[in-house]
Length: 101
Image (cartoon, rainbow, N blue to C red; front, side, top):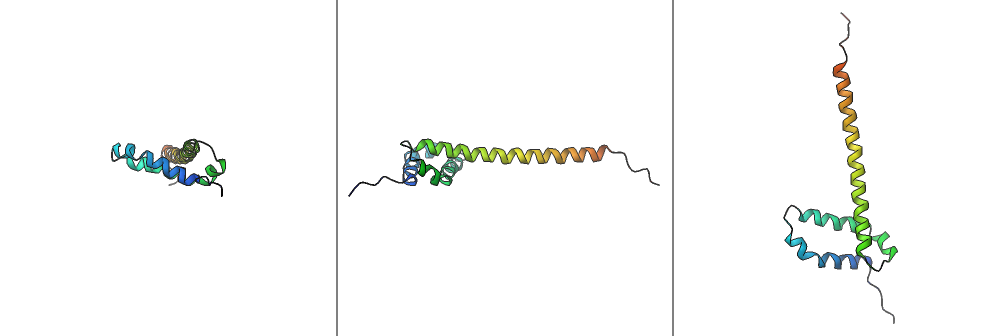
């Protein structure tokens, strides 16, 4: 019987365990951020597993980058909406009142 390779999810879990001491040394406010990065990597575990890269940290890092890029896109979209709302509000305030008696 041949050997089976560990799944990508197993490899990712092992990476997270290797970084456990680093996580414990982080400030409390940074620990949830650290955990979130591994959540991002787990979201793309299916695609990363298909890649079957010999260094599982690289697909994890790219997965994290993808999630952060998505968050940036969401923030930029929200910022544009807020800027448009402020511009509309400024335009309404600058408009002269109706001259109707």
